[in-house]
Amino acid sequence: MRPEKGSALISIAGGGGKTATLFELGRLLRADTVLMTTTTKIMKPEPSPFYNIIDEKRGVEPDWRRIDRNREKPLVFGYGSPSYPGKLTGVPLPFLEEAIRHFNYVIVEADGSARRPLKAPADHEPVISPYTDIYIGLIGLDVLDCPGDDSKVHRPELFELIRDKDRSAPVTGEDLIRLINHDRGLFKNAPDQSSRIVLLNKADLISRKVGEALCREIKDNLEFDASVVLNSYRESESVLYSL
Image (cartoon, rainbow, N blue to C red):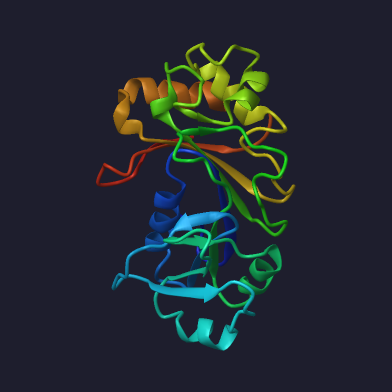
């Protein structure tokens, strides 16, 4: 899942492990300059020797000289807000346009899913930069065979429309394919030039045989060009299979 050496703006949307993916990519790309941020909200990470954090006040213009001084390690940047204690809130899209002039890689959590493994986006979601080079759409595999209701799906009423099934019906691979291909589904707002990656996360919760078969089924039914990756952050190497 590591991009080719160079530079890229990477946007992450969907459900089931976006923040983990944000930090895993930051770790993989740390030999280059890396900015990790959000256009929505993320939990403010704990201090770490592996990255720097800038928690700016909302309404304050970014200090790019200060930001540049903190590029020796991956940098987490966001805005604090008294309305969301313990969280970093999103940067505006023009910030990302400037950020790609300062960093080799800008990685953006661009969607919220209320900790659900599956997400059907509303009209205002996700918040994707038009300069996105790589768009990663996440699905948590703990949604499989579970009802498509609020226990596993963020905005189940929208997912119900996309898959044309009652939310009480268990989620199948066919339902995931519908969400992936739908113009208001997993890759909603994807810029034309962006490369797409379907990231099936939490693969440790199903058998490898089932996971690989699901990857092949999705790949064979895609209506656009995309990579399909079977992934688990509980394994020593997170990428288990890819097409």
